[in-house]
Length: 220
Image (cartoon, rainbow, N blue to C red):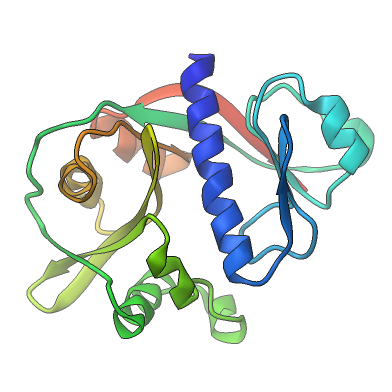
């Protein structure tokens, strides 16, 4: 279990690293941590643990907020507050074909359309910098939109960090979760899927045969 959690935590840290670098932020990896040395984009922490037992390393850095990837740090005594708890998820590779029409964003205009769909209902997004700069299109990432005719009904991000594919930023119709393994297998064949979810999205991931493999916490 810990090995799979470590793969999920590293995949997530590499995604966060790419996001921060796309926004011009300085980042660093150590044996135990991923660190953003400046202000990260919205919804991102300053630090993520990459292995269990990293409390002392986190305390030395004392970030503004951090992701406790192995659910083994109690940061109350450091004056931190628990933002949320979630479950790491895992699904083995599948040869299933997607049942919905998916289109991958390949241009800046298509990425802007994808982000507009992702940001529906987020009033703060209207007054915030762009979340996903076009430089992210040249990373091993796939911004995938699900379509009904010409209408986007949802989407997700896939990020390949061998030996796994990260699934994140899922939005839209609930039935999309069942199709994510198929589109992931079409874009990056042969890799297990990892990510983390909570609440209703966790229930949808379970229904799509994702397995819960561990817990994480985000402290602020």
